[in-house]
Amino acid sequence: MKTTTLALLLSLFASRSQATIYLGTYQGELLAIDDSTYTVTKHIKLKTGIPREMILMPDKKRILLMTNQYSGLEIVDLEKGEVVESWNMDSPTVRLRPTSMAVDPTGRYVYTMSAKYTKQIDRWKIDDEKISVIDLTTHKVIREELFPKDKKPDSFGMSFRVSPDGKSLYLFGNSVLIFDTATLKIVKEIDLEKPVYPGMARVNFIPEIDPHDSADSVTALFQTEDPYVHRRIFGLAKFDLNTKEFSFNPIGTTVPGKNEDGGMSNVRLSADRKTGYAVASFGTHGDKTCQFWSFDLGKQALKTREEFPCNSRFYFSNSYDGKDLLIYGAGFEIGVYDANTLKQKKLVNLGYDITMSGLIITPPSATQVASRSVSSSQ
Image (cartoon, rainbow, N blue to C red; front, side):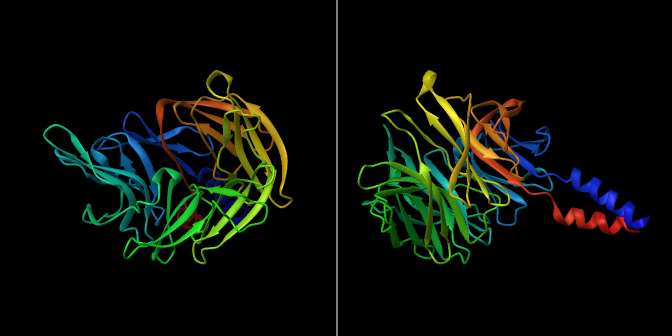
């Protein structure tokens, strides 16, 4: 009887212990959203403005946000559901414009690309871009190094990662720049414009945050073309942050084609890493059409595709368990689609205009489940 009761209690609690989605709004808030019902469970008021970028801290218990006005930075404690630290990087005469962030494994230092704007009598003086290190305990920029002038920042996706040992900083784009975190100098470049991989003429690889990625690697969609007839190809690539090595698995022909505008989103993976999803778009503005593409990673084959209505700007993600595909951003709504059928399940009106600061998903609390299981057995 006790065993049955325990099982029922654990099952009931597990069903309630859901992952949480976090989205920023133009009202200067961070919304906490239940990953199973897509209802807003909490409004976290920010102190320095509208969020434009956010990342999950290494302890998985805090979110670091970069806000729009005065180059604000804020730390949100997810257990408390509130801002615990906030500060502005700007002064009346000097403005710092950071772009993208990566936090080191200790959670103390933030690496970013930044440009300094200094107010003159008749104009603003704009300095060259730098790699900067911000200390989250002192709230100050503690080190800076000029970004190499022979590299163009625009050719990179502003996607940073820090190696698990904290010694290397990676910047991804048409090549991978590897910086020594002690000196902020480039120690190696992996040139993807002239890859050594057979059948590839140029590779673009820009990873995004995946809640199921290990701390040792990043996985992302890559796009390339063959060097002979310039056929565009896409596939899944994995980069090992320890060994600094790539593995490429081509899947199929990508878009755009026939001189059309369009492109492909990054990849989203199921929790078991057996199925991948991407969005292919064709055309622009009123002529734009979008499709979900589902592919079998084991067979490296396209499974199904399904057209869906899309805005000019949007983001693509999936639920923590990978059962739902999500279309959101630049609007009030989240479109929820079934990952198996690629058909829309529902359209959720959040009531708040979502910024393009990205989406963070935190897993269910395993420690909470464990503590409940102990108490329910008595």
